[in-house]
Length: 175
Length: 345
Image (cartoon, rainbow over all chains, first blue to last red; front, side):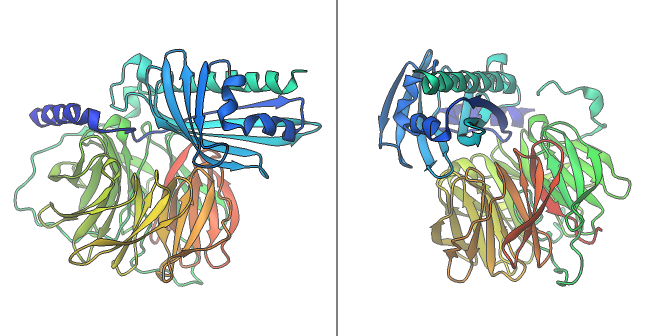
């Protein structure tokens, strides 16, 4: 008991030093949407890493550096704060984009880390866009509060992806 | 996820005080949660691969998979959120960690039932079994410790403080050492098992997670998730990193072939298998696609390896020689890790 308490206190003291620490149990969210436009047209919008603010309804502002190649970074301003993301892979042949969270902000989105991958595949004359995320809850202890547990993380990521897909669809199909 | 029905859990063994002076038996070859299976007596190339045990996080299952026939032979229900696993050298038991429940389960392979559960630490993650089956080693992700347990009772018999968020661990039985990947400390801790003392730390790339020993124990390969590279550590009296090579996006699993010549790495974010020549430390240009989010990888026989794809719920069967994917086997949702079961067909 005392040992546990001591450990818990130790962890609390160490807390601030642990940048981007996450827990041992990942979660996932995956959504797909068929968009009535060819993959090249979807990719043209999606592949501009700094352009997400033009189509994602939850992104208020973007500050991007490094262009559209691996290593690029962007700071997204969401309703309740900023998160920073880094581009890991942009594959124009596969129409596949993969990026990760660099600076977390549980107020803005209740996760402690994520990677997201978006892939565009042909679907008849249109495209099927798959958007998947792998992430960890914001509070990685075994007694997380309700707004920082697995369910909160899954709900927030699912909503972010669903709204993103709809926003992407609206942007790509707008005349 | 956190609301687990109590009745799903078999009775919990009470943790007792460590008995002083308990002689630590020689520990088994690495059967580790995240590492490779170093078979102490590799099967000959013409012998069929043993069964593979797979933990599925979301399905809360242990599946026993025949990778040659590409069939699931048995499914055993577990408590929630299984993560790491290790098999006893005699093939009688598999031990599974449940970090979210502070729990370790023992699965009896003869009866294919959960025969015991033990409360262990805060977030038990990586696990290994001693060669004689009497001791377990467990890394505790949030207590920053390596814990030794009596395998029959679950009683804690030793503990040593290591770095932050210890994940994968491997044991070199001959040397009497455990190597633990301290994920948030960007280092490997080297622990002497006789007295559970940390004797060295070795800096690595960012976020080391899985590790694997060469068959002779002279080299340790560490997959660094965040920096996307592989640390090559020379063990011995003063362990040190001799090379760090770019390997791909988010390497989450690493395994060494029984001849020590090839290192296999599963890159989670790119979904690919990276193949490294252990002599030249160069990366093969061809990278077969494992799946969407591959995690654990293990060598099953001299000719076969297998990985799990956490997103597509598959075990992926790999031909080591041909460097190709031979097939896939569906298992329960979100498989995270796997281990070969020595001698179990």
